[in-house]
Image (cartoon, rainbow, N blue to C red; front, side, top):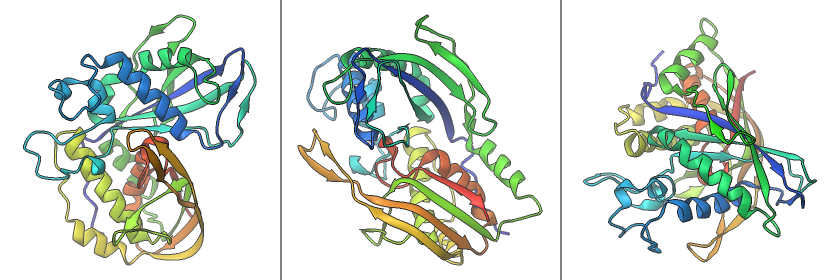
Length: 328
């Protein structure tokens, strides 16, 4: 078996965050990712921006600004790839709850996850301070306040957890439970040792918008998923970890074509959000549902396990492209 090389130093750190609705309760949309991200980003900027400039790109402090790193990621000086800011991935994912309920009674919890990559891992204190301030400013319809109740670090592989912040104490107790791609590769290869999967099911839990040949893919062909995933990994490595992911991408894609889509139970989910920066609605629809694949899957298994943490396609910062994979 030809193995897909591991981007060994790619870092992934996961936190589960528990909010509690305030005395007026909360009213949130069915899909909450954009609402969380929008309010969070605005609060983060107000807390850390020292120049007050409307645009980050011309700011002389951009290279050292935590807001610019997280929300306006740009190419480093002399970068030869992805000069277009829109194509540079942000170093985090906000995973909203999958439930579609919209009303939360006073004292009712709302739990979501924050996943940080590379350089953003060291910025956790900024995220906590921002969440605390965000809780007082409010969220959703009527901007109703909530409480930042608890944050737990979670090892994505072992599920070991440790509470690092309690709202009642307002004290951070750091605990490193992050993993690297090397850890994920080792874990994934252990899962299939001596029993490489010939069939796998991928479940797209939130709208997954991947492109192929310049257009949104309406059918989740396996090679399209692998193409999108390789782009995301190489970009995260280059812009947020400081190294290039060295792999023979054409050869990997050629081998991925040998994996056939044998059952397709996905559908297109239309969704859009309003972008205050672009001052217009932006389409973010994508595929949801399940697909089953058959073929030489073993070498791609670590990639797919990594994809469960990285998410896939467009809009990952809002929780888009969340997937799970299992042998069948």
